[in-house]
Each structure stands twice: as structure tokens, then as C-alpha cells.
Length: 346
Image 1 (cartoon, helix red, strand yellow):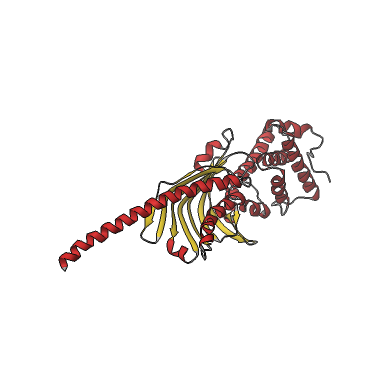
Image 2: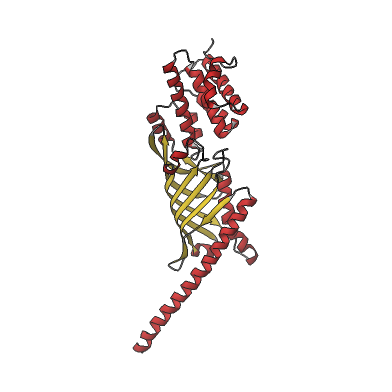
């Protein structure tokens, strides 16, 4: 009997190895098909998936499917930037709990997540692209599946890809998820960091950048941000780097121009240039939201005349951007254009 068990053990071990190899082969084929479906579904939804791949897939234990070193490159969605660019998403490991699927829930965890927004090639920010983005990301999500009948099973599993694409499109999802990551930005020669977190509101889940970290970054850059600006910027974590760079750049350019020539209307130039650059990068609607937020609860005391001047000059900046003027022409136009209010009038 002992000899029989000694023979039976390696037979069972070999059988298990064979089953795992077959399962891994099936998972490999199914995963490749899923990536093809993801690309096709993305195209149908206006999300161009340039490529998506993983290095390895297989069973981890007997109840978990693991994908290693997943990378996907898509066109950057419109809520990130109106300018063409690429969104690069990487995940060190993705795990799917098979036991959860049997209970009608796709329990997914992912680790070592990185997100990069690659600017267009000629963008002034392109040199910083490699060091900026989100790192050390951790994700957990439980997506309900309808597996009550065979007809709905495949469609229900396909919802995972659709929900992921919806999040890429809109930056929000009705599916509860928890995400944490570290954001790194290079602004004005300083490398600054911020926590990226999940927030729920209005029935949606979305990413935010820590308001406290934004306040610290503003202090480092010596940029004055109102609480309304901080709130608006925090709701757009993938835009935060560009918003802060533009704000910092407009401040520095106006200070330098005034230092060279004291007749330069520094405040007017800063507002026009700031609004102009925000419009060029994000469009007039978002630029107006951001510049209006600066006027609400201003850090420094402003008179009604100050506010009228700033609102006017912000509008002028948007007009310049929509008219297609070059950035290096803005200073001269601020000095000569009668539509610009150069000094507050009581």
C-alpha cells in the first residue's frame, strides 16, 4: 500500500501540473482576445488604444488569476487636455479572484500602478514627462456580475472592459473603487509630490489630488491659490501639474517683465497671460472656471475695481487665445490694446 501511494503522489502532481499548464494556456488565449476586444470597444467609444499588452498570465494558487507587467497606451482623453498627447498606464500586477466570480462579483486588485501623460512632442513640458505622473498606485474594485444564465455571462464579464473605458473617457465611474498613488511633478525647477486619492460624490467615484498637498506646493512655488482654486485643481489630478506650471509661469514672466521695465502693468500682464495660456491648454470654458475661482475668496484684499479689472483681463486673455495670437506677442498687446484695463479704476 505504501508503494502504491508513493507511485500515486507523483501521478497526481503531474496531473495538477498538466491542468495548470492547460489552464494557463487557455488564460493566455482568452486574455489576448480580451485585449483585442478592449481595443475594438475603445475605438467604438472614441478612445484610441494604441497598444495594450502584458508579459505573463496564469493561475496564482488555485483561486486567483494574475497578469504581470500590464501596459496600455491610449490617446489622452479630453478631460485631461485638449491638446493631443498619450496616456501611458502600467500595472505591475493585476489579480482577479475566481471565487468571487462564482459569487457574482469580479474582485480585482492591482499594484505598482503608474500613470503618465506624455505631452505632444513640441510641448514645453515634454522634457519633464519622464519624471512626472503617478506611481506606487494601489487599486481595489468589486464589479457586480450577472452570471445567473449563460446568455448574460459573457456580456457581463465584458462589462469589465466597458467600465474601464468609461473611466478613461470621463474620469469617473459609478462602480465603487479605492485607489491611492503618489503624484510627482516638476514645476519651476522644484520637484513636488502629492497624494492621489479616491473620492465619492453625486453617485460617482473619481480621483482627486490632496488639497493639503496643493497648499504645500503653492507655498513652495510662492503662488497664491484661493480655496476655490485648490478645490477645482484637486478635482483634476491629471491636470494639476499643467495648471500649476501655467500659474507659476505667468507669475514669473510678469515679475521679470516688471523688473526690467517698471512701466509694465504687472498685474494686468499676469492675468492676461495666465488666462491666455490656460485657454490654449484647456479651452475657454475651463480657463474661465479657473480664473473665476481665483477671484472668489481672493487671498489678498481686492476692491470691486480690482475684481472688475481682473475679470476683464481674464476675458481678454481668452480672446487672444481663441484669436490665435502667439504668446510672445501678449506683453506688447497688454501695453497697447485699449480692451486691457492696465490699472484699476475706482
